[in-house]
Image (cartoon, rainbow, N blue to C red):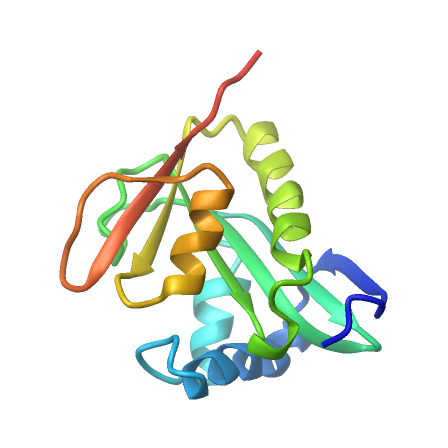
Length: 160
């Protein structure tokens, strides 16, 4: 996808669930996600306001091409992230990757994390997802363990 296309960023809304699921399913079809998702999973995981700090979509020509979710870790979360940390997930259509969308989404999420007073953010990344591993390393995340094909990464935030 051309870098010349204008990209708009805005908070995700419930009406985005189908488009957000399609973003993740495009990632799955490209072999970069373990399983497909359905709209209900997107609603539950990304659009439910419980523990949500920010969920931002990137649109090009009215089409959602990516999104990033930032939540506060909750008791018993499936990522085994300590309560109170942030949990971030970045999802960008493969045909829209490497165009700066991820960096711009992260700038929005980082501001939200700072406003929320987070000290740490976790990104649990599939060990075989080279683009995601490179992206989070570029954003300053460092690995802090490994479990079941996942490499948890963390970013420690400095507050003034």
